[in-house]
Length: 148
Image (tube, rainbow, N blue to C red; front, top):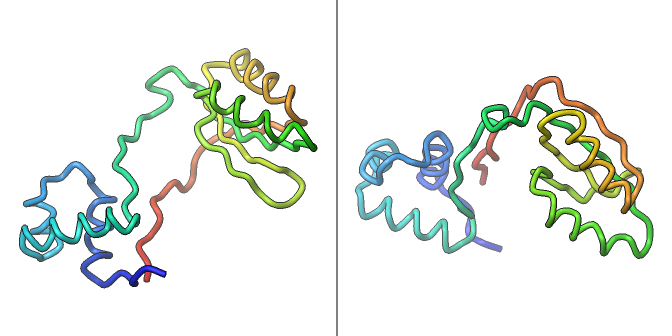
């Protein structure tokens, strides 16, 4: 097990989650540490696998994806091996969770329109049974809070 995060590590993570593009100087000032100490903590968090990447968030609607859907999929037997290939060739499946319960997978899909969504879910239906729900709005979408 890795060492727990201290208060400075948590402040650093929170600051990065607020704005991962801020300069190292601004980051150091925000968490009340020197530049060298901030750089060392940042590198240590990356090496420990606490920080796994930096990404840009893009509004799907700005790219023409007017629909967002949650798709639950049930897969049986040998078809499990086919799921990965569908995921690999369908970039509009932006998240896939393997879950317990009645479904095997829960997927988040973005689509241009209903025809696009239908094509994606038809492809998924070749591998398993699907149930699709359209998303009206996202009420919460937040980063993981730094704990421990």
